[in-house]
Length: 269
Image 1 (spheres, one colour):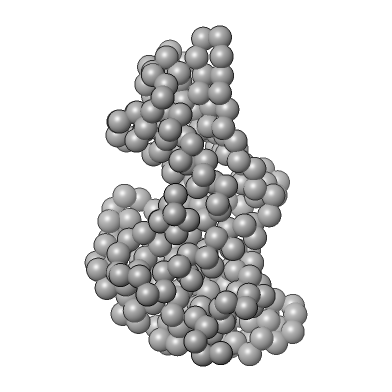
Image 2: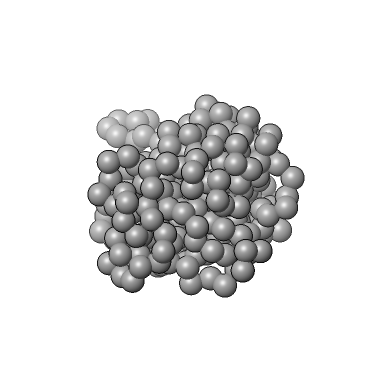
């Protein structure tokens, strides 16, 4: 079975980390060969299956990512921007496919991934689901078809543990809308309305973030004009869709030329 790609999961104890571990171990197309947690975490040195409250999986949690990456063909990483930059350099050193689902990365941090992408495959997306990536393409096409009589608003909702806003997916949708209109999102983004803000500026793309309960992910793109509204919507009810998409990306990246890819490439959209 050594021909089956070995996968390392970073941030093993998180909700997505545990879902990714389950997705990989349930798959007949990949092997779980390593899991990584931050130094000092309670799981370090434990079998990850037992740490998750189940049966042993024969994989010990480590705080040494390079050692783990050296055994793998791919790394799936839903952590934090600073950690992702460190993992990118190490994954490139090990020539692993690096699948990045980390959100909240600044433009500077995204640009800092490029040296690693010269040596290894990086697949980065704010959302790994098929449905969301179809929504991104639809948003671009609708924005291109409509003029600025249609105001564009992106509304997203997530669980109360999420630490960044707007979500990575909301930003993907905003970028798609801006691209469809032939403008730079940074020039038209409206993210903070509070108090007496004045009238809405024509051509702006607005963002709104809802945080509450256990919402997995809800995204609406609203096109509103006098007399009519168009709403494009995606509702996620199970974060397993993101894990399945990330695994698909890790498998797709095997044998590809080094470079910085996204889920549009993976899904052939």
